[in-house]
Length: 118
Image (spheres, rainbow, N blue to C red):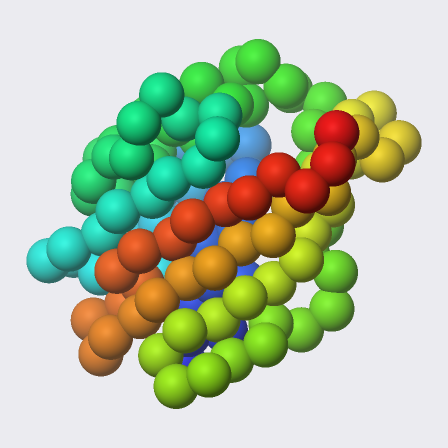
């Protein structure tokens, strides 16, 4: 899978309420050997599918009415993809975000989220 498809796949985990299905999405999108995620709402960058799963568990408990919507197709340059997204709460726009992900043959190796507006 190319970087854009992997990034879109990973972002779909934000909308998955079932913990097992969410973990399966993360394992499919992220590289098993090396994955790091960071964004301004994470206390620090963290590594691995396990760290990402814990982050999303916390996110979904704090914002159970949130939905992450990618806005258009990712822009892709070689092994790096970027996509804009909107976070809705209770069906109303809440924040605009941008995600950048780098991938190798094993999956996403790094994803950085940026909050553009809240």
